[in-house]
Image (tube, rainbow, N blue to C red; front, side):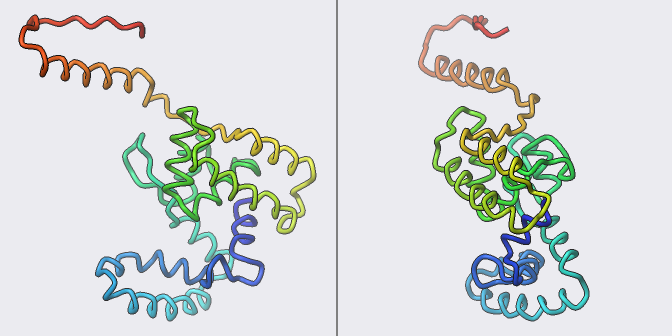
Length: 220
């Protein structure tokens, strides 16, 4: 599923969004460290990518290049684990709580959509959605991108039937992303942090405060 969707985004003739090929985008990821020199090294880095891309195509099939790309692509940041999400498997586990081999059409389309702007359509959109802000700019942007992917699915995979399309469209229309929420980062943790921060404010602004302060909350 993910393979076919990604091919569509890359273009049937191998030319993805913009002017790059998927091979060049993979080369771009591989030479990520070369960009740390700033704009002065930008030209050299681009030359390396264009020279490196044909070598990738000589040694790997298109399927293998796509697999490498999905395994190295950036999908945002996990605030739960405080680490960057690199690779489709890590992204699938974070966003949907399951292996990428187990995602459905809608989830696959959502994951692939994130690659275009992972911080906005991945990290921010998930955070907004979990917090109930399903009409935020980030969520709307993700919806728009996912809609494009879903509309083109029938062109790249014969197994994508009309009923699958209808289900995916319905979930998209109602923003039913059902992002996985790590309950280890429970509401209680956030609530406790808020209470403690308010206590610090009280301590700073109160001259006379008992040595032992008891705070009552409605949270069990």
